[in-house]
Image 1 (cartoon, protein in one colour):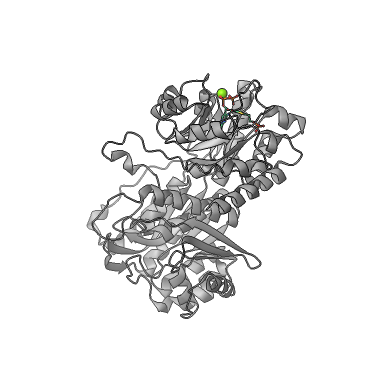
Image 2 (cartoon, rainbow, N blue to C red; image 1 turned 60 degrees about the vertical axis):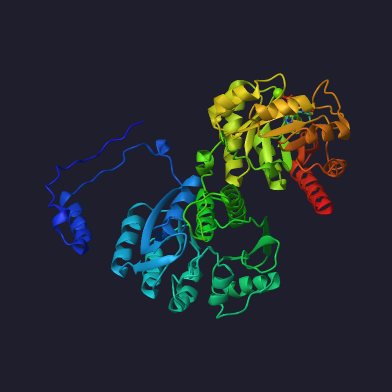
Amino acid sequence: MGFHCTRVVSTPKAPSLSLLKPDLISTKVHQLNKVRGFEVKAAMPPEDQVRIPHVLTVAGSDSGAGAGIQADLKACAARGVYCSTVITAVTAQNTVGVQGVNVLPEDFVLEQLHSVLSDMRPDVVKTGMLPSTGIVKVLCRYLQEFPVRALVVDPVMVSTSGDTLAGPSILSSFREELLPMAEIVTPNLKEASALLGGMPLESLADMHSAAKYIHHFGPKNVLVKGGDLPASLDAVDVLYDGENYFEFRTSRIKTPNTHGTGCSLASSIAAELAKGSSVISAVKVAKRFIESALGYSKNILIGNGPHGPFDPFLKLKKYAHGSSRQSLFDPSNLFLYAVTDSRMNQKWDRSITDAVKAAIQGGATIVQLREKEADTRDFLESAKACLEICRQHGVPLLINDRVDIALACDADGVHVGQSDMPAHVARVLLGPDKIIGVSCKTPEQAQEAWVDGADYIGCGGVYPTNTKENNPTLGLDGLKTVCLASKLPVVAIGGIGISNAHSVMKLQAPNLKGVAVVSALFDRESVLIETQKLHKVLVESNTEIR
Ligand SMILES: Cc1ncc(COP(=O)(O)OP(=O)(O)O)c(N)n1
Ligand SMILES: Cc1nc(C(=O)O)sc1CCOP(=O)(O)O
Ligand SMILES: [Mg+2]
């Protein structure tokens, strides 16, 4: 491994740029680079080079950093991809509204596009505020010259505060030039209506029609965001791919801190596409990510206005008075908890990665690797491979018992039992951000788990099981007693499958969030089909209970 320059030419002394008029600086920098004749080439062997998923955002700057370029940078960083930026306008903006807009000259937008696209070759381009027809045209020209894997268009027209960021004059260039190049376009109701010449959009059925009409302009996929739909309880977005409609429902989070949601969602979709996800999985992961960030940020206070920013890193509240640790754990992840078993996967002649993939495809919302027989080295390699799969799908991966394996592969956390490493020690080793689950069979153990800093409780065996030897059966009553004794979310485990999952969920303890299952998923011929079946039962139970 190594990095060296093939040729380094001594640098001629540069005239001070501060002596140049600002509009001459960029031209001079071009000329200087030519004169210097730098030829720095990475001579790293290709097999040692690590390709980094890369999104280029073409958008406006928001001085309040809730939306625009700043939101895009944060969302991409939080989703683990590189983000370069082409700035189209600079806005003076805060949580109250937009106080000023300064559109950059087309030539300089062009220069930024050239700098990034000719050298850095992003995987995906995401657009936000495109304030003039000229800028849209320049962008389209550059995308033809330097094609990228996907173009994500967020057709920004109006800010959260209601201020205009791009006037109706750009609509025709959007429809005729930009949208036909897009992999996905993500209008909210107002933007969808504007693209369709003012068509009123007031219902889910209208959103379906709007998605279909916008699809006629040429984008491969249309995501109409229904956040502003009146009188709807859940926030519903509709994705149309030219053949099928998909509805994404998330609970409506009551918070003023939604400034930048649209930019961050589009950037997160772009980030997932850059990692290689399909559009549907990119939208699913991005929506879940934004939902968690909004939930986390619902009471953060930045600025005095009505449109506060949110925190995609879920980190800011560590400064809150009296809070030692803010959990990043979303208890709804416990809904369908798949726990692997190496013996079962061997018996059915499938790899652990195939088993994990199938479980996630079937609807598993969290995965635990419980590889009791695996050598440490094999376990670590499997954990790394499974983690990659889980990260692609936004599903947390926990390791059973082995805090060392979790640390070594940077898994999302561990599950420990009463004879494993105590949760408070695991917490010290893993830090505040990782997920820790603890097995509890009694109210006392549940209390201790909370004091120890656990994120959730695994409670069982609810029914007799052949998967774990000599495991006492608690029954539904035992499960309920533990649930009632704890503030922590609980997942039920032991002998659970499609025939009895409904009875478990019917228990109606508010902190019982789901079921953890081994044999009903993995000691079967098709992990995918069994997970799908269980997922259906759980969704039906949820609907009935509500
Ligand atoms: C979700 C969940 N709950 C309970 C357990 C059991 O953990 P433990 O008691 O440590 O037993 P082993 O799994 O280590 O045999 C679990 N793994 N997951
Ligand atoms: C790993 C485990 N822990 C349990 C507990 O009671 O804490 S029961 C169990 C085994 C669960 O496997 P199956 O879904 O095949 O019954
Ligand atoms: Mg254990």
